[in-house]
Amino acid sequence: MTLPEILKALNLEAENAGVSTGNEYNGGTAAKLASYTPVTGQLIANASGATAAEYNKVIDKAQAAFLEWKTWPAPKRGEVVRQLGDELRKYKEPLGELVSYEMGKSLREGLGEVQEMIDICDFAVGLSRQLYGQTMHSERPNHRMYEQWHPIGVVGIISAFNFPVAVWSWNAALAWICGDVCVWKPSEKTPLTAIACQKITANVFKRNGVPEGVSCLVNGGAEIGKLLAEDIRIPLVSATGSTRMGKSVAVATAARLGKSLLELGGNNAIIITENANLEIALTGTVFGAVGTAGQRCTTTRRLIIHESVYDSVKNKLISAYKQLKIGNPLDDSIHVGPLIDQDAVANYMNAIEQVELQGGTFVVEGGKLSGVGFESGCYVKPCIAEVENHYAIVQHETFAPILYLIKYSTTEQAIAMQNAVPQGLSSAIMTTDMRQAELFLSAKGSDCGIANVNIGTSGAEIGGAFGGEKETGGGRESGSDSWKAYMRRQTNTINYGNEVPLAQGIKFEF
Ligand code: UN1
Image (cartoon, rainbow, N blue to C red; front, side):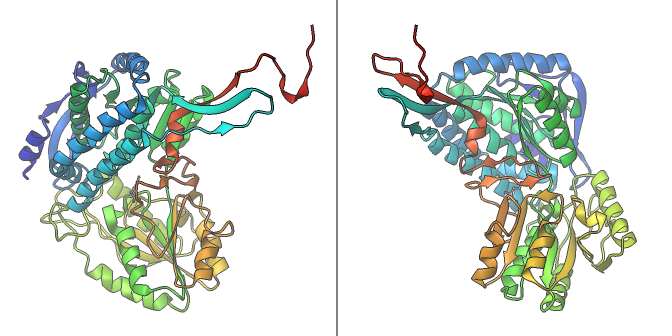
């Protein structure tokens, strides 16, 4: 599809209202957010942002909507999310293309991202009938104890440019079936995909009589994120992005005793052991390192390789990187698209300089590309450097396709190195030796939220809880029992007898 066709299919215009409570209010009068595609550098469209007053209006609406939405039976809320999943199936192609266009990831990845949205809707539908609490045996006669989960309220969602739609849906689909209402602040770099999602959702919600305000969108910059984090009306803020941003959200929500759910930076490693199937190891590595041009929080940044296979892995990687095609991500034969913007290119160039200054050696050179097809100035070469794990630049997450090679001799040493970074999102080991695999997965192994065997660090499925430890922020989104973060737990004790026995055997007579 051409860009005008994509915009038309998604009901988008050159100037778009970027602040919305659904159907009744679509506006925003603050500074425009210009959306430039890194594919060509062209301006795609403008979105309007929210003023503080407009932000407040949205939160008022969301609060009012919560009072009604939380009374809907959870399976009825699930039915609405089921229809949203169906609607996303209909819009998969234009929405996936817009994701690729606005963010710069390959078309397959753009479509894959919309598929993740569909999958989480399906997951949420089932979950809407499974918001289980436990029952306990009371220590008192004729008493019953149990716990139940109630909706928590208005959930603020701050999302990043690299997964401009999927990560919002992981949060929103679960929060909705839990009975919460959502206020979404997307990345200022990808406002249009967010508006497209809001329009698709608003139509489904309207059809079902869902109250206005259950799905809200507030485009804007860091000032909107700050308002959300400090807002006493918002019991939970779920934020995806840099560790720096996450720390400020954590501090602001904690200061008011609100909750935060954080999914922040990673510095993910694959350990390639002497027992690895090298074909599997190489495929996992190359996809993990250059997919999304190194801009996933799960991107493989470090390769910790056993000394006996080090040279062979290095040489195979060098030849694999020679075959990588860099260019327009909408072209199916291309492996690597652009970085999000020129600031990201500057960070990449700076990291390359730091690698050299700190003692690293490039075995595949990096650099910015220019000339025909690269006019946006956002295209760079995936590169590989031999380094040591302790270098400051290696300890830091650079959101670009730079892969570090590190040599090791014992499995324990490799695991220690894998863990010796501030971040703790994703990790992997390549081995056919079950003792190595199990050690890596044991408490003596990886300290990350995600630990894989014989698959790479990126490409997690929605069914598992997604997130990580240390500077990654500790939050868990998406599958397993992550839904519990979006609800409040209540413990109930019921006395069905004629006496009032006190707990702990205490007597109180009068
Ligand atoms: C992210 O980069 O913020 O595991 C999320 C993956 C994707 C999600 C990445 N499913 O690579």
